[in-house]
Length: 246
DNA sequence: TGCCATGTTAAACT
DNA sequence: GAGTTTAACATGGC
Image (cartoon, rainbow, N blue to C red):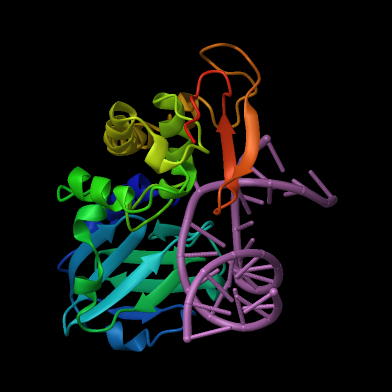
């Protein structure tokens, strides 16, 4: 489920409940779910991989699907006891499973950098560039997972973007040539939108070029698999095609 | 069948 | 107290 583009689809999916009143709320989330009853769902917002449900009475719930989270509408796909959050509206019921559910403190909006979201209209490539310039020692594979810089980017985006621009995951930011640096920022966004479209079509996996591949689609040599950087996430790359700058 | 993975947080270390 | 490492969470696909 959970990279940024999937959250955009989730939002679209549940937009049908906007302005609807919560008739009943349940689930085993570690928050007071009862207080949501009778409240109107005023707004649905995303920031990267996070989903915000803004209710009347200034109550905001944040949902993060983490690695295995899921949701369903009208139909329970898991046992009652494993429902993390259940919101019943007159027009249907929304269920969330295995996710993090958090109630936000007043003023939470100011703690988010809304132009860091790759899938937002507010996405600001220049701001991303400035943040990256401040951490020249950081490896690009780690930078692409940094939600404060590339909010919504995940391990799929990371791997595929790096292959697209033929950049080695263990390149240090400070050593990357200007042209490639610009490409990095441009393609991070572009890949998110391609991801979104492919996910919509159900063809995302089909479009993977490097993740899980044995051979490089460009040169046919063996693909490397390594747990790179401080984040130590699964990284696939071609030593031949992806230039390493250190 | 067991391993591993589109992720993050907080506890447990140094 | 800082920075870093590890564990926990928990489900589905291969």
